[in-house]
Figure 1 (cartoon, rainbow, N blue to C red):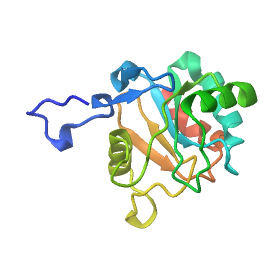
Figure 2: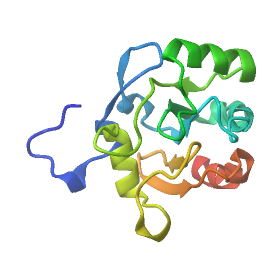
Figure 3: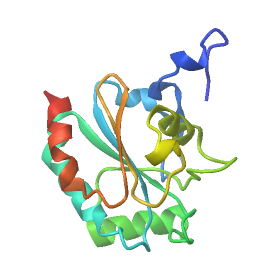
Length: 170
């Protein structure tokens, strides 16, 4: 991640981060400028894994309006994402026909948490001021200007976020 030495922490934006795609390419989050984003930590062997279907439906419904789902696999919750990036990609495509953007496996909590996730948690803390991600399929909604607008817990189904997405797309 490259940041200007003059940029204070308060001036950071989601667009200041580089992330690694599931195919091991490094990209800048700035490529998503102007889009509404739903950023989700995902796992293939979790009780919430069927949410992939709902996430794909959201993506299909709004992709033509500059909406993107970003999936970040994480193995931090009871080792429910044990596979390699290649295995995760295969699983997502074969089982749920995932076409939204997927990224390399990351830590979302702890000292080795991905910088993007540190930023997301700082912008939208969790329940009772606890910033830690509690489980797989925690979701962050980001507006077209890169502002982290809302955080949703694992039990929030993707279709329940549809109205909030529609408001940001207008």
